[in-house]
Image (cartoon, rainbow, N blue to C red; front, side, top):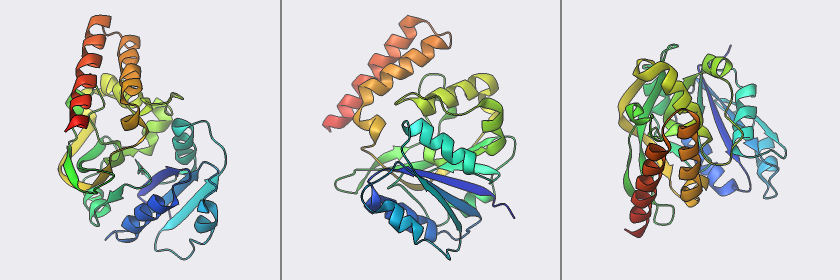
Length: 244
Protein backbone atom coordinates (compact mmCIF):
# COMPACT_ATOMS: atom_id res chain seq x y z
CA UNK A 1 0.00 0.00 0.00
CA UNK A 2 1.42 3.38 -0.99
CA UNK A 3 2.25 5.84 1.75
CA UNK A 4 0.68 9.27 1.92
CA UNK A 5 4.05 11.07 1.86
CA UNK A 6 7.35 10.61 0.07
CA UNK A 7 10.17 12.45 1.84
CA UNK A 8 13.23 13.00 -0.39
CA UNK A 9 16.65 13.79 1.06
CA UNK A 10 19.70 14.34 -1.11
CA UNK A 11 23.18 14.16 0.34
CA UNK A 12 26.87 13.92 -0.40
CA UNK A 13 29.60 13.31 2.19
CA UNK A 14 27.30 14.56 4.92
CA UNK A 15 26.64 11.44 7.00
CA UNK A 16 26.66 13.12 10.42
CA UNK A 17 23.90 15.55 9.46
CA UNK A 18 22.02 12.91 7.46
CA UNK A 19 21.73 10.88 10.67
CA UNK A 20 20.22 13.94 12.39
CA UNK A 21 17.56 14.11 9.70
CA UNK A 22 16.94 10.37 9.98
CA UNK A 23 16.47 10.68 13.75
CA UNK A 24 13.80 13.34 13.27
CA UNK A 25 11.91 10.97 10.97
CA UNK A 26 12.21 8.15 13.47
CA UNK A 27 10.61 10.47 16.03
CA UNK A 28 7.50 11.17 13.93
CA UNK A 29 4.23 10.47 15.71
CA UNK A 30 2.75 9.36 12.38
CA UNK A 31 4.91 7.32 10.03
CA UNK A 32 2.71 7.33 6.95
CA UNK A 33 5.69 8.03 4.68
CA UNK A 34 8.59 6.58 2.77
CA UNK A 35 12.08 8.09 2.98
CA UNK A 36 14.01 8.34 -0.27
CA UNK A 37 17.71 9.18 -0.04
CA UNK A 38 19.66 10.15 -3.15
CA UNK A 39 23.37 10.04 -2.36
CA UNK A 40 25.85 11.62 -4.76
CA UNK A 41 28.40 8.81 -4.50
CA UNK A 42 29.67 9.79 -1.05
CA UNK A 43 33.00 8.53 0.25
CA UNK A 44 32.19 8.94 3.97
CA UNK A 45 30.35 5.66 4.54
CA UNK A 46 26.89 6.95 3.64
CA UNK A 47 25.99 4.07 1.33
CA UNK A 48 27.21 1.52 3.90
CA UNK A 49 25.07 3.14 6.59
CA UNK A 50 22.03 3.29 4.31
CA UNK A 51 22.41 -0.39 3.42
CA UNK A 52 21.94 -1.22 7.11
CA UNK A 53 18.63 0.62 7.44
CA UNK A 54 16.31 -2.36 7.51
CA UNK A 55 13.23 -3.10 9.58
CA UNK A 56 12.37 0.57 10.09
CA UNK A 57 8.87 1.72 11.00
CA UNK A 58 8.90 3.49 7.62
CA UNK A 59 10.15 2.36 4.22
CA UNK A 60 13.61 3.50 3.14
CA UNK A 61 14.62 3.70 -0.53
CA UNK A 62 18.03 4.90 -1.62
CA UNK A 63 20.52 5.04 -4.43
CA UNK A 64 24.13 6.18 -4.55
CA UNK A 65 25.59 7.42 -7.81
CA UNK A 66 27.13 10.50 -9.40
CA UNK A 67 24.55 13.13 -10.31
CA UNK A 68 24.49 16.48 -12.10
CA UNK A 69 23.67 18.63 -9.10
CA UNK A 70 20.85 19.34 -6.69
CA UNK A 71 18.05 19.47 -9.26
CA UNK A 72 19.11 16.19 -10.85
CA UNK A 73 19.17 14.49 -7.44
CA UNK A 74 15.73 15.89 -6.50
CA UNK A 75 14.31 14.71 -9.81
CA UNK A 76 15.74 11.22 -9.25
CA UNK A 77 14.02 11.13 -5.88
CA UNK A 78 10.70 12.23 -7.35
CA UNK A 79 11.00 9.48 -9.99
CA UNK A 80 11.37 6.91 -7.18
CA UNK A 81 8.50 8.31 -5.11
CA UNK A 82 5.14 6.62 -4.74
CA UNK A 83 3.44 8.80 -2.12
CA UNK A 84 0.49 11.05 -2.81
CA UNK A 85 2.48 14.05 -1.51
CA UNK A 86 6.17 14.82 -2.00
CA UNK A 87 8.33 16.59 0.58
CA UNK A 88 11.98 17.50 0.04
CA UNK A 89 13.99 17.56 3.28
CA UNK A 90 17.60 18.75 3.28
CA UNK A 91 20.25 16.60 4.86
CA UNK A 92 20.74 18.03 8.34
CA UNK A 93 17.33 19.68 8.60
CA UNK A 94 14.73 18.22 10.94
CA UNK A 95 10.98 17.93 11.26
CA UNK A 96 9.24 18.36 14.60
CA UNK A 97 7.82 15.04 15.87
CA UNK A 98 4.26 16.02 14.95
CA UNK A 99 5.11 17.42 11.49
CA UNK A 100 3.75 14.56 9.39
CA UNK A 101 0.72 14.14 11.64
CA UNK A 102 -0.21 17.82 11.34
CA UNK A 103 0.31 17.85 7.58
CA UNK A 104 -1.72 14.67 7.10
CA UNK A 105 -4.77 16.49 8.48
CA UNK A 106 -4.31 19.53 6.23
CA UNK A 107 -3.18 18.27 2.81
CA UNK A 108 -5.28 18.32 -0.32
CA UNK A 109 -4.81 16.86 -3.77
CA UNK A 110 -5.58 20.34 -5.14
CA UNK A 111 -3.06 22.47 -3.29
CA UNK A 112 0.51 22.77 -2.02
CA UNK A 113 0.48 22.65 1.77
CA UNK A 114 3.24 24.54 3.59
CA UNK A 115 4.26 25.66 7.06
CA UNK A 116 6.82 27.88 8.72
CA UNK A 117 10.25 26.71 9.92
CA UNK A 118 12.76 27.92 12.47
CA UNK A 119 16.04 29.31 11.12
CA UNK A 120 19.00 27.70 12.88
CA UNK A 121 22.57 29.02 12.98
CA UNK A 122 24.81 26.17 11.77
CA UNK A 123 27.55 26.92 14.34
CA UNK A 124 25.70 27.73 17.55
CA UNK A 125 22.64 25.62 16.62
CA UNK A 126 20.49 28.38 18.11
CA UNK A 127 17.35 29.79 16.52
CA UNK A 128 18.00 33.09 14.75
CA UNK A 129 14.64 33.66 13.11
CA UNK A 130 11.61 32.16 11.40
CA UNK A 131 11.23 31.31 7.73
CA UNK A 132 7.56 32.04 7.08
CA UNK A 133 5.51 30.51 4.30
CA UNK A 134 4.36 33.52 2.25
CA UNK A 135 3.27 32.28 -1.17
CA UNK A 136 1.83 35.70 -2.07
CA UNK A 137 5.45 36.87 -2.39
CA UNK A 138 6.48 34.18 -4.87
CA UNK A 139 6.13 36.70 -7.67
CA UNK A 140 9.45 38.21 -6.55
CA UNK A 141 11.43 35.59 -4.59
CA UNK A 142 11.49 32.22 -2.88
CA UNK A 143 9.32 32.99 0.12
CA UNK A 144 8.47 29.40 0.96
CA UNK A 145 10.56 27.10 3.16
CA UNK A 146 10.85 24.41 0.51
CA UNK A 147 11.46 21.60 3.02
CA UNK A 148 8.07 22.35 4.56
CA UNK A 149 6.07 22.22 1.32
CA UNK A 150 4.02 19.12 0.56
CA UNK A 151 3.50 19.01 -3.21
CA UNK A 152 0.97 16.60 -4.69
CA UNK A 153 3.06 14.19 -6.76
CA UNK A 154 0.75 14.65 -9.74
CA UNK A 155 1.88 18.29 -9.89
CA UNK A 156 5.38 17.18 -10.83
CA UNK A 157 3.90 15.03 -13.58
CA UNK A 158 1.89 17.99 -14.86
CA UNK A 159 4.30 20.92 -14.36
CA UNK A 160 7.55 19.03 -14.88
CA UNK A 161 10.75 18.45 -12.91
CA UNK A 162 13.10 20.98 -11.37
CA UNK A 163 15.23 22.77 -13.99
CA UNK A 164 18.89 21.77 -14.10
CA UNK A 165 20.28 25.04 -12.81
CA UNK A 166 22.69 25.37 -9.91
CA UNK A 167 21.05 27.59 -7.31
CA UNK A 168 17.49 28.87 -7.86
CA UNK A 169 15.86 25.65 -9.06
CA UNK A 170 13.20 25.73 -6.34
CA UNK A 171 12.29 29.37 -7.00
CA UNK A 172 12.07 28.63 -10.74
CA UNK A 173 9.57 25.79 -10.17
CA UNK A 174 7.45 27.53 -7.52
CA UNK A 175 7.44 30.87 -9.37
CA UNK A 176 6.14 29.15 -12.48
CA UNK A 177 3.50 27.33 -10.44
CA UNK A 178 2.45 30.55 -8.71
CA UNK A 179 2.12 32.45 -12.00
CA UNK A 180 -0.22 29.79 -13.34
CA UNK A 181 -2.28 29.23 -10.18
CA UNK A 182 -1.87 32.29 -7.91
CA UNK A 183 -2.88 31.71 -4.29
CA UNK A 184 -5.76 29.34 -5.02
CA UNK A 185 -3.43 26.34 -4.91
CA UNK A 186 -1.60 27.05 -1.63
CA UNK A 187 -2.63 26.20 1.90
CA UNK A 188 -0.47 27.60 4.70
CA UNK A 189 -0.21 26.25 8.24
CA UNK A 190 0.92 29.24 10.27
CA UNK A 191 3.12 27.44 12.79
CA UNK A 192 6.76 26.31 12.87
CA UNK A 193 7.15 22.59 12.31
CA UNK A 194 10.89 22.06 12.09
CA UNK A 195 14.42 23.41 11.95
CA UNK A 196 16.05 24.78 8.81
CA UNK A 197 19.81 24.99 9.19
CA UNK A 198 21.44 27.93 7.43
CA UNK A 199 24.68 27.53 5.51
CA UNK A 200 23.43 25.51 2.54
CA UNK A 201 24.49 25.94 -1.08
CA UNK A 202 22.12 28.83 -1.87
CA UNK A 203 22.84 30.55 1.43
CA UNK A 204 26.62 30.39 0.95
CA UNK A 205 26.30 31.53 -2.67
CA UNK A 206 23.48 34.01 -2.16
CA UNK A 207 24.69 36.52 -4.78
CA UNK A 208 24.72 33.82 -7.47
CA UNK A 209 21.36 32.57 -6.24
CA UNK A 210 19.79 36.04 -6.40
CA UNK A 211 21.34 36.51 -9.85
CA UNK A 212 19.53 33.41 -11.05
CA UNK A 213 16.33 34.69 -9.42
CA UNK A 214 16.75 37.92 -11.39
CA UNK A 215 17.21 36.03 -14.64
CA UNK A 216 14.15 33.86 -13.92
CA UNK A 217 12.00 36.97 -13.42
CA UNK A 218 13.21 38.47 -16.71
CA UNK A 219 12.60 35.19 -18.54
CA UNK A 220 9.05 35.20 -17.16
CA UNK A 221 8.20 38.64 -18.47
CA UNK A 222 9.19 41.03 -15.69
CA UNK A 223 11.00 44.21 -16.66
CA UNK A 224 14.77 44.32 -16.23
CA UNK A 225 14.36 47.34 -13.98
CA UNK A 226 12.13 45.48 -11.52
CA UNK A 227 14.28 42.35 -11.69
CA UNK A 228 17.51 44.28 -11.04
CA UNK A 229 15.91 46.34 -8.25
CA UNK A 230 14.77 43.17 -6.48
CA UNK A 231 18.21 41.64 -6.94
CA UNK A 232 19.79 44.64 -5.22
CA UNK A 233 17.26 44.68 -2.38
CA UNK A 234 17.59 40.94 -1.63
CA UNK A 235 21.40 41.07 -1.85
CA UNK A 236 21.69 44.03 0.53
CA UNK A 237 19.20 42.53 2.99
CA UNK A 238 21.00 39.18 3.03
CA UNK A 239 24.40 40.81 3.44
CA UNK A 240 23.16 42.87 6.39
CA UNK A 241 21.74 39.74 8.03
CA UNK A 242 25.16 38.10 7.65
CA UNK A 243 26.78 40.98 9.52
CA UNK A 244 24.47 40.72 12.55
